Length: 181
Image (cartoon, rainbow, N blue to C red; front, side):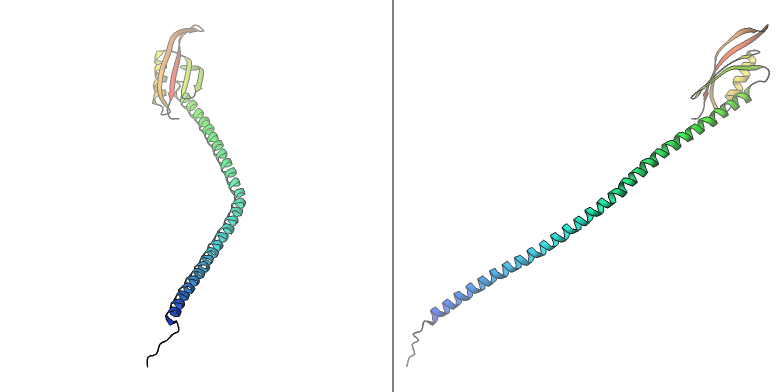
C-alpha cells in the first residue's frame, strides 16, 4: 500500500522556514538596535566625562590665571629693577671714569710749567685749555697724556703767545679722546 500524505508538509516547512528567517531577521535588527544603543551610551558617557574634565580644567585655569598675573607683575618689576641697576652701574662707571680721567690729567701736568684754565669733559671727549711757559712744555704735556692708557688721541687745537703779568706765555687748547666706554 502506498501511503499518501495529504497534509501540506512542504508548505508547512516553507512557511516555517520563512517564519524562522523573519524571526532571525527581526532578532538581528533588535540585536543591532541594542548594540547601537550600547555604543551610543558608551560614547555619551565618554562625552560626559570629557565635558566634566573640561569644566574641571577651566576652573583650574581660572584659579591659576591669578598666579599667571602675579608672575607677569613680578617679571615686569624684575625688568624695571634690572633697568635701574643698569642705570646705577652706568652712573658708577661714569663716576669712576671721571676720577680716573682727572687723575691722569693731574699726573701728566708738568709742575710749575703749565697751568690749566679750563677742563670740560663731555662724553668721550675732554677739552683742556691752559697756559704754559713755552711750546716745549705743551708738547711734553701732550706726550704724557698720549702715553696714558685711558686716552686714545690727543690733538692740539690752538696755541698763541699771551702776555701775562709781563711774561710771554703760551695759551693752548687741547682735544683729548678718551679710550674705552
